Length: 302
Image 1 (cartoon, rainbow, N blue to C red):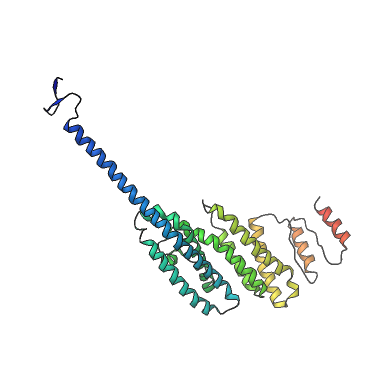
Image 2: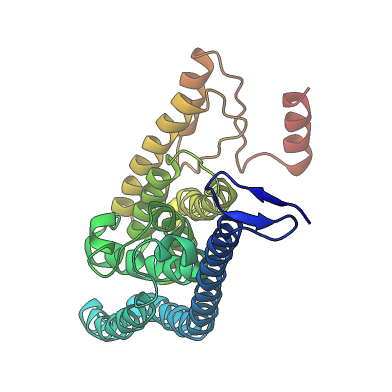
C-alpha cells in the first residue's frame, strides 16, 4: 500500500487510524464515560431519595394527619394543651425533613422535589390549621420557611387542602353550639376563595368551593333557624347574613332563591323593599296550606 502524507506531516498507511483519529476517539469516549458516570450518580441518588422519601414521606404524612386530628380536638380540650402537644409533633416532622434534605441540595432540590411534594403539602395543611386556630389568620409563606425552603406551589396547594379541615371544624362547631365560629370560618373561606386559579391549583379550586359551600349551608341553617335562639344571638346572625346578602347582590347580581325566617311582619317589609328594586319576590308563610304554597310557587316559576 502506498504511503500518504497527512496534514501534520506524519506518514501513515492507508486504512490505519492516525494519532489525530485516535485522540478524537479517546476524547469522545471520555465524554460519554463522564455522561455515564453522571447518569449513574443521578439514578443512584434518585433511588436513594425515592426510598428515603417513601418511608419518611409516609412518616411525615402520617404525623401531619395526626397533627390535624389533634387540632380538631380544640372543641373538646383547651387550645393551650393542644398547641403544646402539637409543637412536639412538629419537631418530629422537622427532623424527618432534615434527613431528607441531605440529598436535596442545590439543583437536586428541583430535580427530586416531586417525590416529597405531597408530604410538604400535608404538613403545610396541618400547620396552617394550627395557625388559624391560634391566631385566626392565614399562615404566611415566611412562617412556613422557618422550617424548610418551600415552593410557592406547595404553599398554595397546602392552603387549598386547609379548606377541607376548616369545613370540618365549622361543622363540628355547629354541633358544639359555637355558631359565631361558623360565621367566622365562612368569611375566612370566602377570603381564600378569592385566590385566582393557577395550574395545578385549578384542580383544587373545586375543593375550596365545596368546602365553602358546606360552611355556607351551615350558616344559612343557623339563619333560618334563628328564631329558635335567644333574641341577642338572632340579631347577630341576621346582621351577619345581611352582609352576606350584600356580597351576593354585588357579586352575583341575581338571587334565585332567598329564605328568611321572621317572627313578625318584617318579612312583608323585606318583600316590599325587594319588589321596589325590581325583583320578583313571593312571601311564603306558615299560614298557607301546602296546596296554596304549591300554587304560588308554580306561578312564580312560570
